[in-house]
Image (cartoon, rainbow, N blue to C red):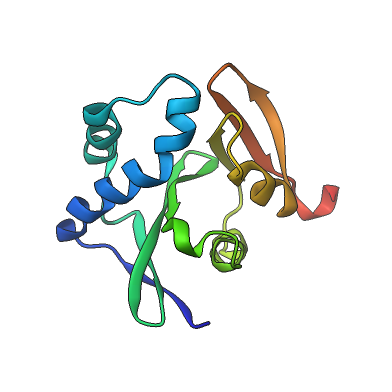
Length: 146
């Protein structure tokens, strides 16, 4: 399976907000937090094409990942993959590539409580820092502490 990452462009936003709504719907409904408008607006408000890459498989756009730096922290955000491709190694490959990119600080993310994505992050060395009723905040263990 040929997986590639391309830079995002502003015109990607419309399908990205729909992808986010599809991917998060079940988890947000389970948590009693799904709102048709809010799930889309949150992506629109935080979308920055310079930080976002589009995941392509065999030439078709199937997902996205955003990496944003905030001082000594690299945040992984908006990591969404078409449901039909989840569990097939695409997310693992993208996460490996992003984690391997040069960065001197820590890499963090948050995932919804009960999401299957948490297992993906744990398999790749992320550990839980804190959690609340909705979110789990995780940090990638540094290789020297593995």
